Amino acid sequence: MSNESKKLAEQAQGLTARKVGDALLNNALIIIMLVVAAYVAITQPSFLSPTSLVNLLSLTAAYLPVALGIAGCIVLTGTDLSAGRAVGITACVAASLLQSTTAANKMWPNIGTLPIPLVILIVVAIGAAIGAFNGFFVAKFKLHPFIVTLATQLILYTVLLLYVQMGNNGGMAISALDDGYRNFVVGNPPLLTFGSVKIPNYVIYAVILTAVMWFIWNKTTFGKNMFALGANEEAARVSGVNVFATTIAVFALAGAMYGWAGFVESARIASNTANTGVNYELDAIAACVIGGVSFVGGIGKISGIVIGVLMLRLIFVALPLVGMDQNLQYALKGGIILFACALDMRKYLVKK
Image 1: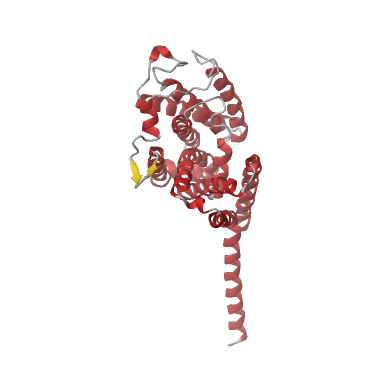
Image 2 (image 1 turned 180 degrees about the vertical axis):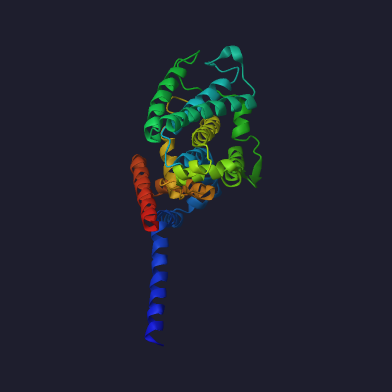
């Protein structure tokens, strides 16, 4: 072999090794999570029991709509810190409108129990209005989404605190929900079973919602405009993208997702307070960055978001089984977000 051939072979080998190293580093967080999950599965066989796996699937489905919504904001190089409070207020509204007529502390006794489709429209509209509000201030006044949504978060929390004290509620948890509402969301009987294993209905709804969001992101002009705007705003504007309308639409769509998440969460936990939905935005942001939605803008896949939510839920289901203190979960979330964002920025700098 000639010297030139040897050099080319060495370069090819070095390039391959570098690619492998980059792939391992770029996916380090997911690899670590899978290793932890494998360790827990080996040391705690109950982790792989049908009940545990259904619980993992259910938690993933419950948190997924929030991540699907907030991902669009991240694609636009922004974020949404008001997501958790939007979930909370829509959950409490849904609960108050769908309390049983026999509830001892029925919040609005004069309106009875509203039809479920109507309540879905109400809470989704509330969520979309909250998102459009955020999008308007971001698009019109060029304010950073961090500041806008932080302000909205505080406003929504105040509104939520006032709302739970209205009617006959007096600040108590909104509970005693109508059986039809609980059955529709949780499933009694469930729409899908595997032997004795029952799959909650909201898991099926999450699958449908994910398919809809995939279609919106990948097959519509709106989705193409969103990614173009996130990649380069000025180039998108020159290309004919309506920056103002697209920004508002992305945030409104995110808000609609929060509204649906609130509707599901209300029935899932069955007892709603002003703390419902607190910190859900942290889980969603962490799941998005784990799943490859980049804060540099214009990058993200629905499949990655699903994987990110699943991985995050996997860790928080697995670690308590090996004796991890639950009080450490917020520090763990913060570390995951920091690590994932650092990896994301590294990929961006390497690409540049």
